[in-house]
Length: 259
Image (cartoon, rainbow, N blue to C red; front, side):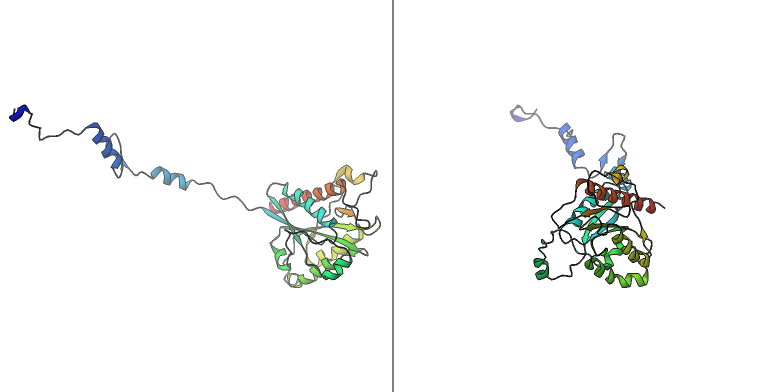
């Protein structure tokens, strides 16, 4: 007992419970109850090693078209919906370059081209897994704009870079006898020289191919639309056939990719 009645503190201080918690919190390594130690990020490292594999890239079908008044473009957009509806496939819209001047297009009362669809180059065709070409007819043959584009593929033909690629057609004509079939016939020569595989739709559209209660474009060679004087727009049946062709082509490309 010292002066003033106070107690002399012991030289051996016992750590409090708070001190124990602070030590554990500030420790650089994890403290185990049995005295063993472990690295704090060991579990995280194991999780990183078992990460999920990357997703496979989608197969791409290019929908390449020329459209002056929008009829072929309408089919192309609906065709993309059909392609995109097949798991693992993606439809990509492209237009071919215009060959007519703005002045001539104005005189023909052609509307401006819709934005958001890029022009394609011949070299880009090699990156497609399948291609659908769409164009209006000119006297039973493809329009000059599409033919001019095919004429730029000479180097691809020389190296046979497109050989084995599946391809198909869709058509617009002004009248019922204006070339729904002959336009596809005469276009097949382009595919033959490139060694490409022509994929017609046949009668896979089912009952829709036999309807006689309304005017309908399209044939076993591919989807089609009757444009008339330009004021007639694609009917739902014509659009449905285009969507079917996109889905059908996608299924063919998918089967071929699976070997």
